[in-house]
Image (cartoon, rainbow over all chains, first blue to last red):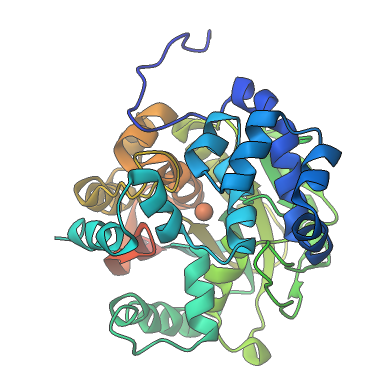
Amino acid sequence: MEPAKTLEPIPGTIIFDGAMAVKGYALNKMCYTFNGAAGRQEFLADEDAYCAKFGLTPEQTKAIKERNVLALLDNGGNIYYLAKFIGMLGLNVQDIGAQQTGMSVEEFKAKLVAAGH
Amino acid sequence: MARIVGGITTSHIPAIGNAISRELFEDPYWKPFFDGYPRAREWLDEVKPDVAIVVYNDHGLNFFLDKMPTFAIGAAPQYTNDDEGWGLQPLPPYQGDPELSWHIINSLVADEFDICSCQEMLVDHGFTVPMSLMWPDRSKMAVKSIPVAVNTVQHPLPTPARCFKLGQAIGRAVASFPKDLKVVVLGTGGLSHQLDGQRAGFINKEFDLMCMEKIVSDPEALTRYSIHDLVRLAGAQGAELILWLIMRGTMTGTVSKVHSNYHIPISNTGAGLLVLENAV
Ligand SMILES: [Fe+2]
């Protein structure tokens, strides 16, 4: 069976497929090292050097330095590996939910609560 | 012979692990969620399973994009967790059951499921959070475990229909194991949630409640969705419903519901709990 060629896009959603996995490989590989304290410390000591070590593109490096989640996703970042970057910074999924939707964290949390009603 | 005594579904959100370690059981935010679990634990105390097969997805601890198995099964004598990026502390190791693992691996491959076997496997919150919810007192936990990791990180993800069939094949494998063992299957993750993109925070209560009902009475109905359907209806990470379908596939055609609970929101997620028994 042939895989479907084109699937109707889902607004506000990037499907992390083979093309995105290729585009984001270096970025995700760097984020994967944030599982361990050693990777986190080396990154925090010199962010530019650590991004360069993994061969991030200028766009990816910029998005990392700006903590810009939507730009990281656009540049091939996968949310599961980005979660390590986000966690390292002491942010949670409501913080980045707010950032990505242009809401305050309180507004974003209220939106989640409202989904239960 | 070994037999499957029941199936459980539960969310596996990292924030739950954090709330457990901070003992927020009576906190107003957490109470409606945690209050669902004592009944599940009572049931486990009554049934006393010997082995838990835990179906979860690795969130980038054990597997990276260099090698991404669609289905991977642990065959280790024990499993340990590790830091996932935010300073998680090591938990006591979980005892495995390599003999049953290899039996399942042999049976699955003979059954045309060409899975990846893992003699070493780090388990992340997808595995540890459900285990902590079901067996909070590790000193009394006698159950052994077998992790089954499913790729939900990188598309293409296995279809809901394929996952249900994998569950059925695991059910056949367990039923043909010559030792007298009681096996419980945990389907973890879900329900609707989306962490990434402008659509972050998407939750679909109506769809979740439909899934909670259909997974009991008519799981085949859920196997007709595509992964793309699930992403659209349940959010990007709501596709974790396939893990519940594997659990459901391991059970007989007809099941009875012992217990259920559903609560929104836990973190960004609609959190569902079900305890199912094979109908006799
Ligand atoms: Fe998950």
